[in-house]
Length: 389
Image 1 (spheres, helix red, strand yellow):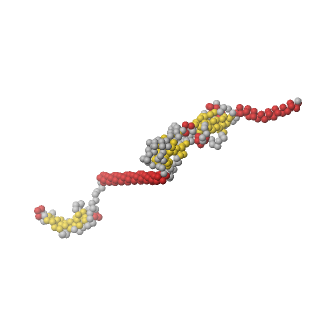
Image 2 (cartoon, rainbow, N blue to C red):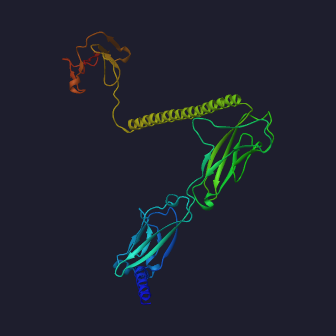
Image 3 (spheres, rainbow, N blue to C red):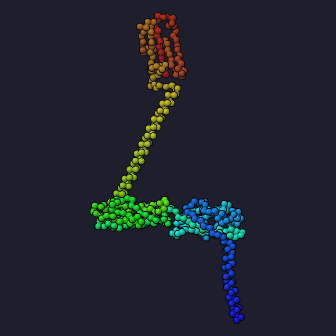
């Protein structure tokens, strides 16, 4: 009996010793861990945006955050939030992309702890990220290739409701932002095809006939359900034919025609740009010449500079009236009766000579004759001029 009693006491001691650390941990946790706070914010917030007022929500004073050396402890490699102890608020430290942080996981959230010292306090914080419509739909099929042309083939015997192809697209956003709808924007023959609003299936809506063109081009728009909505455009080429060689020949010509049209458009735009440039250049040059001539005429009009005439090399000016050869002499003879005036040329004037000396700046030196013609009024008056340059 005594043996059984001692054995039971040993079992209780061992059980108490094994449970004691856990009880101590719970007691410490109850004295250290306070209430958890939770914030919900949209993604793509700018750096420095307010998340919440931590001091107010935890019932703490800003001075307590400072004295307790409050800081954030997280298990993540990157810290998306920042605690401003001087203001007691929690702000965004870096832009948060929900798709990069959580992928397809919904709801998207991350957690961390705010630790204070003296005394020790631990406050868990959970941030829930709301999705924003920041990504357009991505078309997976048909594949859009720049070099090659992919076409879906439809036989001419196709009946109403024939499934041509299916447009497949995805949106990396979550919730209603990822709901997609499909619409037919343009088509070579809108009365021949339709696109399913929800599934993106392209089907015929009437019987295919021989009159339908072989080359059919459909433009489908894929839109999401976000606000504002985002969209993507996909081009589907359809060949209405029964044999592959017919399709190959038709779509080869279609590719060449498209390249020709693209080149023609480029050259037309280039020619228009060149012509416009030349026209503007000529216009500027003409206006500049006109303005230059007008300014020169105004300058000459307002200036007081004398006009200097041009004389041939063997001619000189006599008092600004007429031109004479360099060593040409002439003589004027007059009498008291003007009717008997006479002029003689080719005779050296030795009585009265007027000399134009260029070095004397227009001063004329006059040499009078020994006899005075003023004393003899009846005698003819002879005046001779000689000009030298």
